[in-house]
Length: 344
Image (tube, rainbow, N blue to C red; front, top):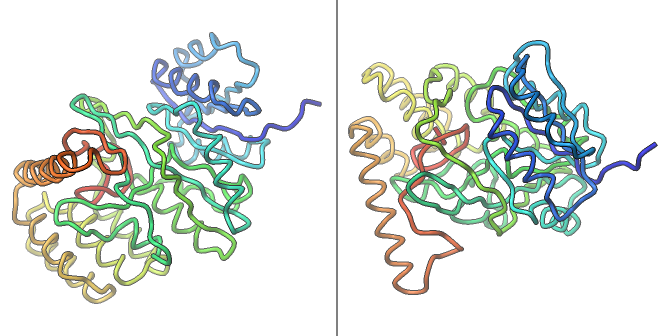
């Protein structure tokens, strides 16, 4: 029998053969060679199966599902197929830098807990420019829920996590699978549940190890997901977050989804919920008001202007801070927290 791999890479995909091929090749060219790459094709997709068949590396396995069940379900199936003690997740439209797994395995060895969840910074790539996220790493003792949700600026957040950065013990991903049916904030949901265990800790490598591609012309399902379902998730997850983080989620993330309704009833309901179950700070009230009162396009332009000035000030003194590359604020794509509450 073949020796067990050190890391299993799980890539869910559907109807994007060119993109998933790029993702697979970035995994197979890692400096850590003892890996397996499991691509889970989310339903019959002959074009993707044919494209993957052209990759002759024996470390690649392809699992084709009989019907589509969504990305969280495909990830869970890939994790069940994994043979390695570590599983790293990769979205089909992203790619890794060659030393990604090497750095993360080193960080895992240095972690002081039995089951570290190891993430990293990433290069956020749009047709306009590149930037590095997250802007800062968690501070000692800072609750994970607050790091990922609470803003320090009116138009942007500092904390961030994205699927393609995550490497975790396979046993943990089986113990806490991704929530099937959750359309947004899938990473946040999983991380909050994972770190609720005493033997789990979130570790974020300071290096940018992932290229997070954002094709602004590609349809994104999370842009059209209903805010009501996400509010229900936040309410169900209240036990996983601090009151400060709960207020930030409702007044920033959920409000950015609900504001297009222009409903005074929804405005009042969200404000009441955040005050009743959370502990809003001044920045939360200001964020809440600007989300509801300033039109989205103008708000995004103001955000880009503010962030652009911050970059110019940094570059004029000591170059890009934290390795940040010049460019406007990133567009929105997936289910993670960022500038306007969530990543698309």
